[in-house]
Length: 182
Length: 130
Image (cartoon, rainbow over the protein chains, first blue to last red):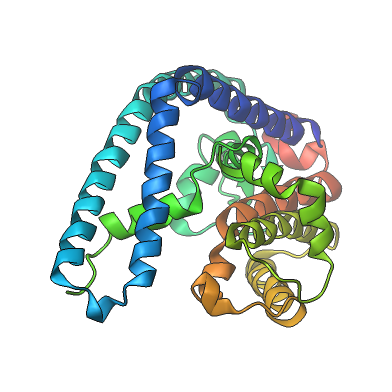
């Protein structure tokens, strides 16, 4: 009873590479993206270092202003970066929705696997989607596909070196998170 | 760019040879976090395989996974490597690293192995057969 599950894993590996490939074509290889990415990474590291060097309590007013200006610049660049990415995200979104509906109709009403646990209530809508009966250990195509994508996509990104660097995600977390106490 | 250039910088072989050495210095934090990330992915898949073969099911299986995943990696970075957790922003940051991806990988392996080993075609599509 391996064929369906392996087919789904194969599909999600292919779509993950396909998605990254399209993003590479449309975004990663463009000069604009590379420049912006380098700039954002550089700024993030600089900011982090400066924050570490100047203890929070003894920041002179002048330095504080400088820091804020840098943060402002970083914010603008991060926004530009996500705008550049948006275009390909949209294209991939459309392509994947189409693909997904094709696979959905192929696997319609088909139990592709047995779950070794009963999913929480709100997940049963996905894990038991379009399946007959009330055995909630039955697993639908879409549930396994989502899990596969979750497991594979980020690893593929990391393997290919397209995942955002840690310094950047940390800084952007700071920017969009609660502002530091003043 | 990101991971690949980092690996090239440290050279992948060199990095992985440090994994099994005790209490090595990790001047680059990202290098150590990458190690934790990939170890966690491998661990997730191995646990998924074991859970599927035994088979463990239900809440027991899920909670045992959380305990093992967090516990084994904790033993690795605090017992084996003895890194200063504060340098990485506390034990929680290290425990979070790659956790969701590892959990998804675990679930996929667990489900696939469990249904492949312990069920037949008839269990899957009883409404078709009958």
